[in-house]
Image 1 (tube, rainbow, N blue to C red):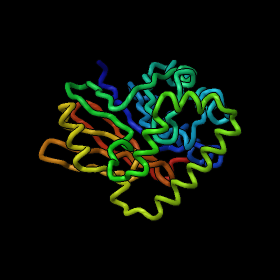
Image 2: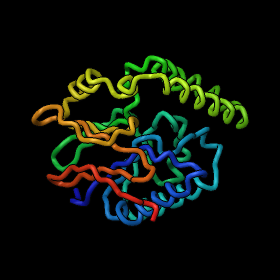
Image 3: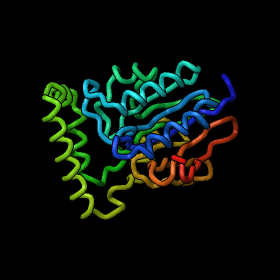
Length: 243
């Protein structure tokens, strides 16, 4: 096992209308990820993903950049988020990456971390949890992927519109993780450290003297990542990352 760091990112929400975030990601790959042993992308990598058969100039460019990183010897793992849950093995392979399921146990440096996107922990948001249950069903997904691209685009646009409308009327704590859900899953996997994204509330929460929950931030005016090396686990902010 090398002592090179393992890096974690999430919630980039890559899309053609935000070339600054794409550039920030490419800068991150060159400056940070190229020096790591592994890069874990914990969901909502893209702002929307309608199937591996719906490629774009951006997704092709991202795949090329990640392939180059993989060929340089960096391990790349992709996890689904609530925006890109239809990302499949075809795209992962095009990136030189592997899809992993949540919750994911990562063992390194004589320790174990629990990795998640985090949306499944928001159990108080009953509307979202019902929607999540529907769209994560394999039968629903296959039927959706069999529909024309135009239908998928229309569905995604309407779902996003409804989500924004409902979110504006919800208390902020409802859309955050439920403490009991966090405690339950950490205890069930016998871990002291959980890393997740989704909530866009970057922070390190000390749950006890030894247990902690580390939350990755979304990429916008800043970029966020967590680095893990021997005796070192830290959350980092990169200001003006696209420069």
